[in-house]
Amino acid sequence: MQQTTLIIHGGAGNIYKGMLTDQQEKDYTEGLKYALDQGYGILRQGGAATDAVIAAIVAMEDNPLFNAGRGAVFTKKGLHEMDACIMDGKDLGAGAVAGVRNIKNPIRLANEVMLHSGHVFLSGSGAGDFALQQGLESAPDDYFFNKERYEQWIEIRDSNFYQLDHKADNLKGVAPNTDHKFGTVGAAACDAQGNIAAGTSTGGMTNKRFGRIGDSPVVGAGTYANNATCAISCTGHGEYFLRAAVAHDISCLIEYKGLSLSAACDLVVKDKLKKMGGEGGLIAVNALGESCFSYNSTGMNRGMRNSEGQEIVAFYGE
Ligand code: ASP
Image 1 (cartoon, rainbow, N blue to C red):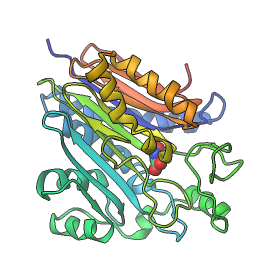
Image 2: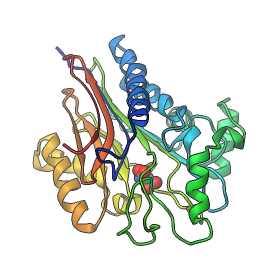
Image 3: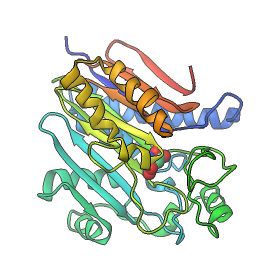
């Protein structure tokens, strides 16, 4: 029988035991479990992988704990510019948005782009116009205000540093001595028809400038899905994930070299990307319902549920 699986992440980075208070651990656990409930509920009822991915991501976009939607970080100008992407492995359909403002759920907008725009990738105010046309819910700036994120931004807004949601003080351009707070979100699913899909949503990096776009909304870098290989959502230092075309590279290793899902993921994340200096991780699923987490950072906020009755919610390294 076809196995159904939902796998999610809420950011990778310097996440280690003792770093989160009991309350924070409880909040993250609840946030990830709620996202699994929302997404897996759709798979259980025979729904499509794309719908499960959207439901799980919307749950995390609505939760200010995560750097996406409501909890999106501040740009250099004190705004929130969000990126999102969804890809359907059944037909290689894809939709993405970059630098969108005041959209409550950017992943829903990415899905509208995939289904109804005739395009793949929209940006900035044009993407906003399309959102309006499609009747998507918008929200005022103060909906996205979050005290912790604001303080994170205040600390570095007068510098030219940008800040990952991960401690990453060895990275070029990244603010030193910053600590992990929250994270980008993503989901990948395999449904009862054996179709797979992946999606990613993020506010990017604190203090980002010049309309910077990360890997998350870029097909083949931070997000990719193909029934023949895998569905992947990444999180980490986007510049490296872009240059390594991480998600598509993994798909190619499976398609052309016959690597298993976990071998392909680990080769790219723990070897190729690491050698380049790229910190982060990813989630992956294939059309058999197999799934894996792979990260080269200390930890990754993550969760998985499948029809075999397995459930994982974890943060720290193994
Ligand atoms: N990959 C995202 C970006 O570079 C950040 C993250 O995953 O936290 O925009």
